[in-house]
Image (tube, rainbow, N blue to C red; front, side, top):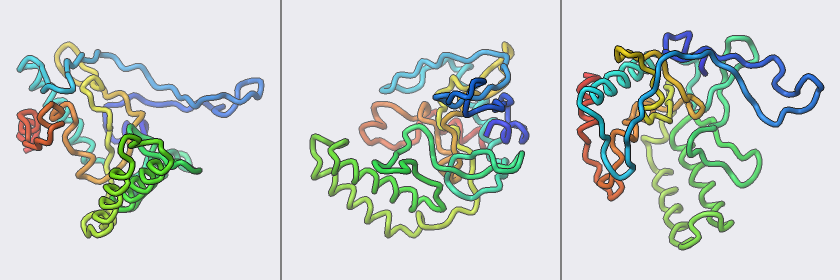
Length: 245
């Protein structure tokens, strides 16, 4: 993913996969996967964001964040990928190629049975139905919704029916876009002049529909009002819209 982004002009560090990724010099299995990437200069911002309150930054810093974030998103929107499924990308069998794989991202659901991981998916309908099926299985196992399992199970069955009958969600994706999925603001590296030098924290990135990939990052809308069900477009979101226009 990193090198695919870098080749397309996205400001990310170059990544390197070790030659020996399965065992050490003595032939022993290594209990984790790892890779290296180049050092990026610059520094991150500490974004003072409380989950129940709106973003709090000085006006000049706030405008800088909007513009910097918007620049990266515009670059990502121009990236053309040779895949069309919701998935995590992985290195292909040929050097320089990429392939789709299961989704391994923030908040990704897994099934109770092997092979555990979900995806790739050709439509949002397939993706949502897989998540709902996994949730139903976990409810039956008593792993989630333990305080009210019957209502939770019935609610998920109703949701499953709604998704099944959605013509919009059933449409096959013609193209997919990279969703960073960890956009807390501290993923951006800045120099002293306020210019972005790079973007970090791509561990949870995956490719998905345009609508999902370029939806507002949660730091621009998460507040007590949103948690209580208020979906009014926030000041931060309006400023981002204005920047895109």
